Image (cartoon, rainbow, N blue to C red; front, side, top):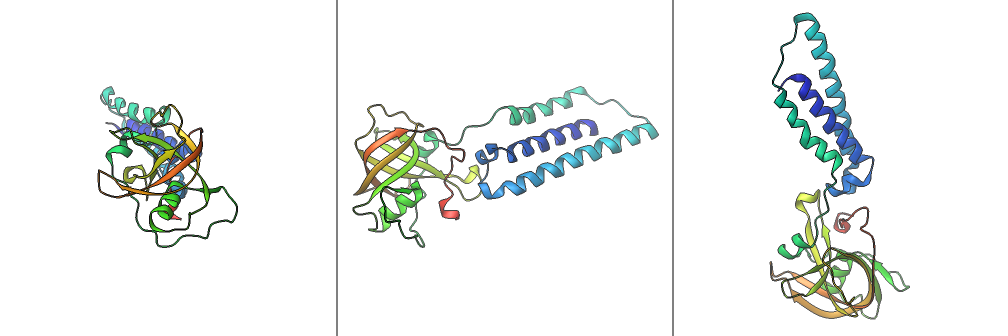
Amino acid sequence: MNRQAQAAVMFLLGGALLHAGTTDLYLRYVKSGLRPLVLAAGVVLVVAALATVWYERKRAVAHGGHPEPRVAWLLVLPVLALILIAPPALGSYSAVRTGTALQPPYGLDPLPSSDPVRLSVVDYASRAAYTHSLRGRTVRVTGFLALDAHGTPYLVRMALNCCAADAQPVKIGLTGQLPPVLRPDAWLEVTGVYAPRVTRDPVNNGVIPYLRVTSARPVATPADPYDETWNK
């Protein structure tokens, strides 16, 4: 692969990172706090690509260039795919095949006095599984729907420490007034009350608390589909 092709790949990859970092696309890959690093990496690649082009043209004028196989330019295609095709966030397929990542919380913030209390999936699951702070409270939680092999419905959010590669599901079992049609990967805003039931995840024997649903409505996929609660 000649230097001009290398520069083109670097430029396109840098442009892809800048495009992702200036939109919400980067949230499909890494947590929100890494946006500055994504943008910085994009700038470095673009500058390096432009410097390579300048150096190669200067060298070609001085010494003359040699043609390289054009097949090397095919390496540009994966980068173009990265720019043009946004990958979906991890969903129900990964959730039902991976054990819940729920762990005992180190500490929890006080709940507001008014209901319904809006909680993340991780926050609700932590409180429901390890404390009694939700007794008598109405909560509102948003996540995507997953169904296990037996048809048991879960409200799920993929939690991550750094990037999508380390994302793991946190699951809430659902009972009560569920929608008549349960479609995996559909995003729902669920309102309900604490349910004392707790089961074990068949994948890793982790704790899965339950929520008794009083109402549920479909919602659009959020800009940031992952849950970073335990990183805050």
